[in-house]
Length: 172
Image 1 (cartoon, one colour):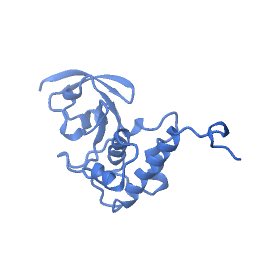
Image 2: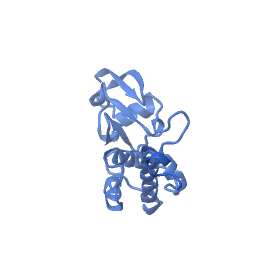
Image 3: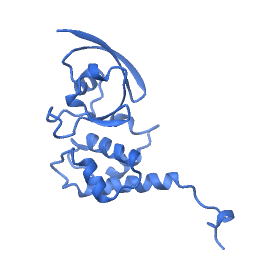
Image 4: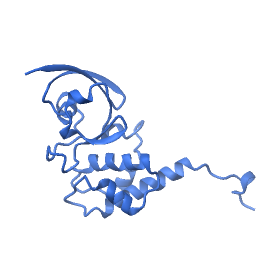
């Protein structure tokens, strides 16, 4: 087997590792680096349980070789929360009951987060289209859609400055 030295930046932490040519990114993340939130489902890019962010785009890590990600910035579900505070998408999944068994949840969150980065105010059809590559056998999807809508609302409120009395937003 041919081995390669690669460097991956995962959730802002740089890792140097040696992998075989055939090592899939999902296995490098889980088995070599301990990022077990990235799940192995179908290994054919059908289910989306392995979705991660690669240089800012949602990709399925089960069909990407680790050597192809050499030098890349990778985001996993473990990197969504900041300083112990849930990201809006995580909060949405919790408050809107967007998960049951949780197996698809990390990939679903990352696919939804990718959508919200590109489109901060998606409608239901756009949400359903964005998550259609991620399969869930438990929820029936409506609560997941609700979770994404919740996150979009939270992100919209966080980015909208509150009006003050000086600019017409105060009590008269």
